[in-house]
Image 1 (tube, one colour):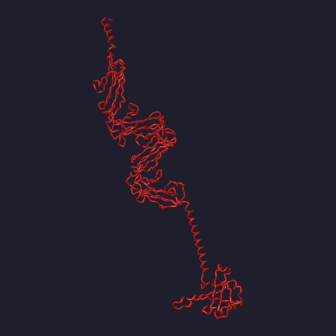
Image 2 (tube, rainbow, N blue to C red):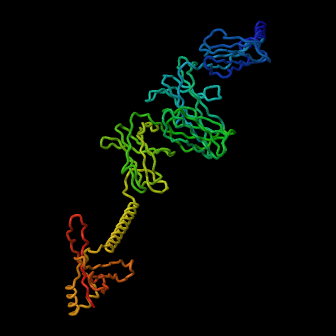
Image 3 (tube, rainbow, N blue to C red):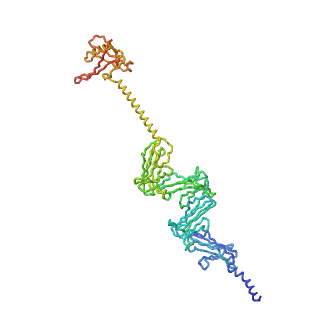
Length: 584
């Protein structure tokens, strides 16, 4: 080897390390942003660059700029620098790198930091399919949609600085641009709250406003609470409405969820009260957006898991359709318990469903599909048989199947009055298909028995009255032909001769000098059990000897003659009574 070659090799070995250090052989620093790399327009953000202790200067570079964006001296203990942006605008959006300078040279560039500025386009909508209630270990699909034609959608999870997923947008037949993000399996060990953004490919660091947050509620198997309302589930616009979630389990917090809603479920802490734990969720003033199906959940503060869902509660808002149905009742508004009653709801306008609501009832309204008959859309709600518990004030409504929680204006109220004392709850109304119940025959029998008793009493009254009229008949009234068994027994020639003699010796009261006075007395007055009649015959100019005859009233033949005509001004004479006397 020649002396010249040896000298060149030694020179290369001594210069090599310094050249590599000047070319960036120091380790690359770290670069991050606080509070995150996705920041709203107008906010403040801090970018940190951390390298080796020997660094005496840090450079912040932005893609597209030939010179460093900023230079900063290291802070104590000397291995990192702080780059502050007090008011973020679109000019700060982009991709950044940082490097550090030391006496031995420059470091390699850091991994890129993408600073995204949000708030440049309208916010999209984030929803969960089928709903944000997910069982532990389950999966769900998050749908980000917008009418703006974004090229891409980004899904952000709360608590994570970087985007969780980025997907190209699609445009289905609905006309909106969307992206579907599969999420899961979910567990109750962490919070699952998401937002989404949209952006265009030519400005990938300028995003839209964030969507409203969507939290996935991970439900477990603990005891479900109850969801109720003190008012009717049928509400009018402007009305104040409060939904109450109650549970005998000591839950510390409650959540109210509306099915197919894009809003985050309402959360409330446990409210102090006697009895079951619970929370009240005020809704109102009511408008069309409040119509829907609600459920509530309970949970404990020390766990992110929620209870099983309550039974659903449907809230129906009236006055959302232009039509107003009519309500009628057959056979009438006043019926007896046990009869068959049909409530007929009709509308001239098209509705595919009718609802029947009872005033003051907390139960959901009855629903029936409408039928088109005789120019009307109608439905028949039957109560077979009706009970007194079903009496009350009813209204009916119409609705569309596409929006079942939005109702028409109510019909005029119809009051159904049911007589009877039965307090048993009646069966639910159904479509009429049965005939009269067996109670009808019982009422018919009771009515017939009552009519028979009334007729019998009437006959008894008539007989008693006729008997009294017969006993109180005045003298001179026509009597029926006597049928005295005693005279009939003494039928013979002597009796016949005696009767003829008495007939010839009839006593008349035509003259004032002679007269016959008959004294008829009632059995109760003279105590004569045989109904005996006494007759006293007297002559004014006859000798004072008087003949008395005891007569049996039933053995006399009495005839009444018309009274003699009297002169004017004189009272009419009493009628004459003839008696045939048998002298023994």
